[in-house]
Image (cartoon, helix red, strand yellow):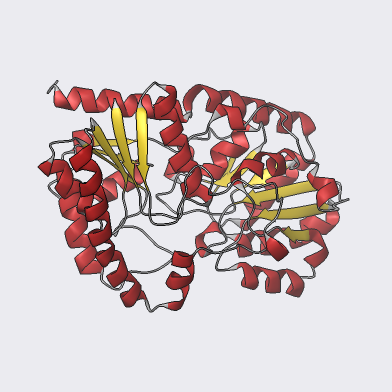
Length: 394
């Protein structure tokens, strides 16, 4: 099968991991995949580097990211709308010269080019929806009514819709006019080759000069709903009592706020913020952690960090949201606590610190579950099966 993968991202961080995971899974199954990216974006090399940390521990931002940070939201959304001109011409150029069996698109707000051309060339369109007008976003929408107008039409006319949680599926169906049978829920997954058990090419303790007894870590974007402030405020006494170092791997809009809070709580010597880290090095950072955390999330998300923690055989403490419950079985493959409940959050962490056998058992169970159920190649196989079923009307 010849597949055209289209996206409008910078292919960094979680989105880059997801894009590479899906496209490489298609190829592993023997399909040919061509990728159409925004100008200057290379999916295969976007994050490959021998550098352990970003310059001065900070993220090096791409041109579009810098534009997003400086333009008013309404102006940036107009540019997103105008991007349809570029994507339409690029897709038209490719589709007029080559024959494809499938268009797979990572959905972006205001994007409609793939849908139009999939109908013109009679090529099935699979739409992977991780962002939408119906969820909490780091950049609140200014042109929300226009975005919803486009979104409804794209969702109603795509052949298959993939989303990451049942909660997000419910929100998407609230648009109305969308066939529920064509909406699939596939939580985020991993490529087993990236997470060999015990992988440790880099000794993070030595690289970061951490000599505390325990390392408790978080990987991911520094955004308000990931609960980093909640983490510091909840563990300020526990860090001192149990000689803990908090390793925060990533970057984002609330980083400066978290740095200030760490100083205010007299936790600076207990906290390391790495800044941007290349995704192929993330397993090394997870390998150096004794406990992995998801301090908070949102009701719809399926955090890639959780399945990556589990794939590395680490005990995980995470909030009890429905999408996370679809991945972690409380007390078996991790520990879940009521969202933003500081007392139970601390109790869960202390229980793990005091019981090495529990940490090992949860980690082993977690790895077994991920390797059995949460692989990109399994997700891709299910998508192709669903498309085939819908096309044959059975």
